[in-house]
Image: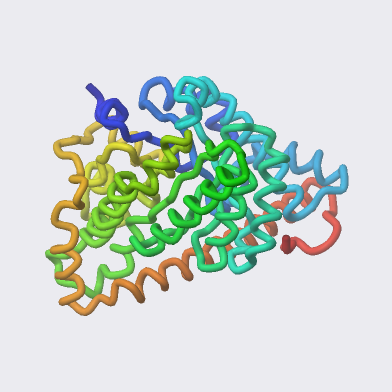
Amino acid sequence: MKPTRQLHDLGQSLWLDNITREILDNGTLGHFIDDFSVTGLTSNPTIFDEAIGNSSAYDAGILEKARAGKSGQALFIELALEDLRRAADLFAPIFRKTAGVDGWVSMEVSPLLASDTKGSIAAAAQIHAQANRPNLFVKIPGTPEGVPAIEESIFAGVPINVTLLFSREQYLAAAEAYLRGIERRIAKGLDPKVVSVASLFVSRWDVAVKDKVPADLRNKLGIAIGGRTYRAYRDLLASSRWQKLAAAGALPQRLLWASTGTKDPNASDTLYIEALAASDTIDTIPDNTLRALADHGRIESVMKVDGGDAEAMLAQFSKAGIDLDALAAKLQTDGAASFVKSWAELLQRIADKAAALGVAAPGKAVASS
């Protein structure tokens, strides 16, 4: 049995951490669904920047929209949603078969809104309406300003993928926002079935400390943070508060492993996938990591619901001088800044392409929300 199928049967969803127009046009995404048990995908500004910059597949769409007077953010959102609607339709049978638990795609609000609660709420509602697909998540970062936007969006019935989470505490803040949104819906007599996932970024921890810890601790911090967070997730699902909401018809906000591609060339290319095998979770996987998993991955153990040796491992990092709380905050701040940079580059790239195709896009290349 393929390792990808093993994870599927374990109860872990595999989502592709990528989207390009080519994988839709040439059947690659369909192949991943049929042969590698892929049941969803995610996108972000960096992914779209690379997709548009490394291909001519978007040129016709950029030209058409620029000629119609579109530019900047508005042009990009239309371009991205064209791809994501097609992907959502490919996953629609899975979405229906799982009653909305699986078969999702994701679209990010502008990273410029990471510190703008009201702007995030409005943008999430707009993208949800414009996408016109029941299986499209809107991604809102789990920043302090993003947390109330998550609650309000859930209350409004918008499916949310909480992104840029790096610690148990950040995850719990996002989970609390989800619970409050559902509880408010129930109090108002509204349908409690508004789906959400919470995305914990893993490999960036190890990149951040690679030159600051002994060799025997390298590539172990992200997995330990994952174990600590998984325990909090399982504890929440076992809580009386959640059981009450589940009895009313709510679906759990599943924990999602993000940033699972191995960054260290000396480590296994399936390191994080194998270590994060866990039921009732999602793993988003880059193309190359997915192919590597299918080819030579080995699923030999499953993460324990109590997080296994996560706390003992984290104690070693603290002893080595790593301030885990401070680093989590920095990783979230740096992650938001990285997406802003990709967003600016993406909108500039679109403007440059429009100009090269003979259409001068009006206004500035980088638009605010």
